[in-house]
Length: 116
Image 1 (tube, rainbow, N blue to C red):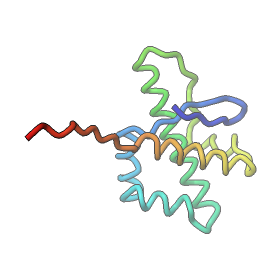
Image 2 (image 1 turned 90 degrees about the vertical axis):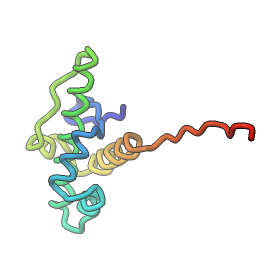
Image 3 (image 1 turned 90 degrees about the horizontal axis):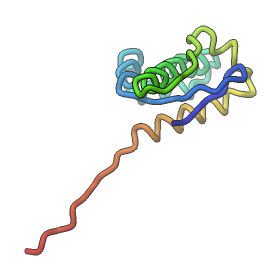
């Protein structure tokens, strides 16, 4: 599981089915959300990034608790931008994108062809 560091604390990230549904409800599609992450307007980019990071950290904490692991309470969306300095934005965006890619990667298992 990827992690982000905010305010000196590390938080795990996951792009779960729940997060994917939230993205679909808010943006209409993952593609539309990705466009917002590349928007020219800084407030659009940062707002989307904070929203997504909040969803991903909350989902990861729920998953870890379900597995019986101890977790720290993830920060709420409204606190993420306060915990984030502008020089940390690129690292946060990379962690979010790496998680999105890793958690949506498809694995295809193929059986060897049978003798005909």
